[in-house]
Image (tube, rainbow, N blue to C red; front, side, top):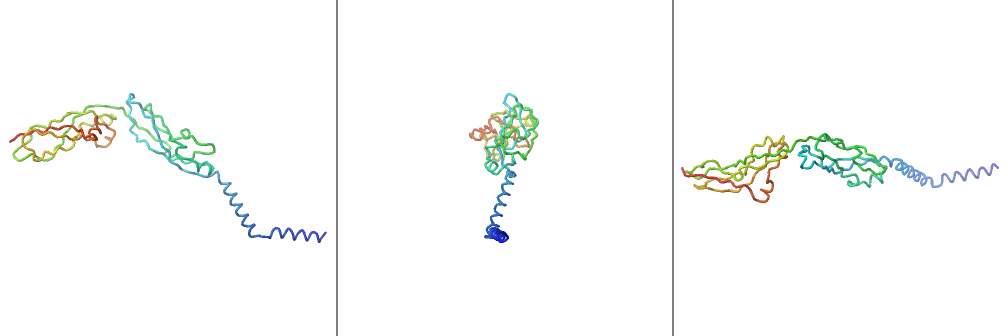
Length: 239
């Protein structure tokens, strides 16, 4: 019995120690794979998702002053197979309804996203956005011709330049439209003009003060793009 036990012990020792280096490497690889598998559910990824807004219809006469982001950053967590396969069009675009023209803010919460099963929403940047609204307003304002230079020697301008059209309609948020008093033309060069009536075709310039990018001038940008600017008649006579 003792001899048999000795043989079995030696056999077990040979099984353990034979190719010991290879067995240790295999054990390390197995442990690494086990660790990767255990950590598979903690993969995190951030993607950019587009934003689409349904704005108020023209009849509501409401104007959004807040600039909406084209995209938001969305961070999700899930298994590598799920998170790695996510595309921008899988999560979005996010659609927000602003059609009533009075919503005070937008919250980019989980209800806006269609997340696959097993994927969790972690963070949205920005998480929310306050909104500022105003009433739409239209009014007619005068066209102001801008002159440059002086006429020929011995002559002078006769009266004020005549502008056709004399006024244009501007529209936009009342906050900005109410402070627009004139719409200027491009400069009219009268350098060296002799006696007589001279007509020039020049373009209108949209208001450029702060906030006036919200103001639309009737006919712009078509007047400029189509090369059909207003006409400015400059009259002058000899001294």
